[in-house]
Image (cartoon, rainbow, N blue to C red):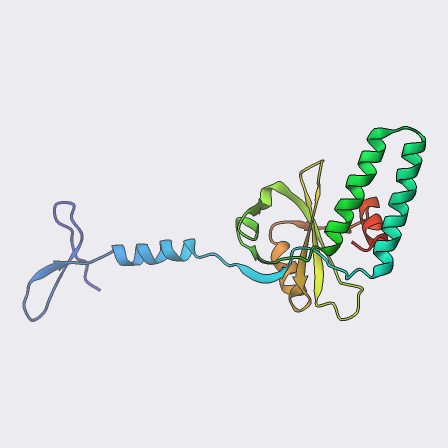
Length: 196
């Protein structure tokens, strides 16, 4: 194949057999295509509730109110005003959270990290390991992706993932994080006990 010499440092030229005119060969097109392909990122999207929700029965509210009343009477008897205020605020918050239903959020896994909704994002470099748990509740269409963050105050991040995407999400996370077993914390046990 003949070589086309460059002149004065310009782009190589090619001669048209019919017109014998010379015009530059474009090399920018291929370069732009390569750059665009490098910027193209593989992502996984899904929608899921922001937290688990269990419908509370009337007996639940009655039990919480009864325990709250017992501790409130005890704090008054001990003349502990701060503890009494704590019991009142805690009881009101429990009643409020029990009625609050989760929003449906968009979750995204990308080469940068994990995005939750529009306001929260976590870089892979700030995460340590992950674990995927299947739901033990019947007719539950979501499992849990539990991620250990490099944060001592609130180290664990729990994300609901569709049951039919467990394998796909696990394989994607393995590209950036190691997989490890998850040991249930005291907070998890308490939340399960009071059905949160």
